[in-house]
Image (cartoon, rainbow, N blue to C red):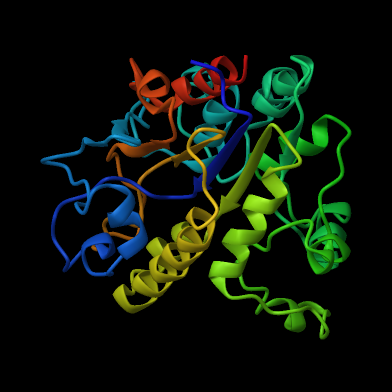
Length: 305
């Protein structure tokens, strides 16, 4: 089988596989028509966490990595980006930012750099407003693992100009927050249009990563109404993305760093497994043998070889 020309990684912060209970798990309270359609009509849960169709595989990944305590974003995202057990290296889960002694690992072994070293092109699709750059520059806001890994290679984060031109995607998908951040003329998008835009961006690169963190924020908020809204937003985005999807040329990889949103009965993270959803002609080869979040980066590199 020929390797795909493009790999799109959708990183959803704080999404695990939970119980089949719409009272606590918004994945069973929201319609999620696009995601359900992709998975053959059924949503995974702890009692039945595997899904398979002719074009899609979904399986659970361990996010605890053999370390006591609740998984966190800092160590979880470093593990996803490097394939190394970051939590085990420092003896604990840590977040939301990468632990200081993990930064050399992130710089040397992140997925973006490895893909480029193999002669392929990579892109981090998120756009950031000027206030973000100001806060980072003033030391008020440390970078989380994904933007940090991207900039460690000397690459620039996308800004408001890139977003307005269609060359990047907002963290909120629709750009609705940007007027409040000093961009009154920022064009608004529907989530479907954002999905279509991301697929257009992907055509210019071998690998693109888009980070959606509203899921983790909604999980910590513990509001079912807000959680369902965020999932409906993402599902509409997925609808737009899939409208131009070709499984022969593109592999879609969706995963997370730790559980949270799937159980709003608790404000903390969970030790639940996280999903690894892979769509495209290579989905079975990609998911074969995957057991933990440390398996994601090596599998992407193998897929792009």
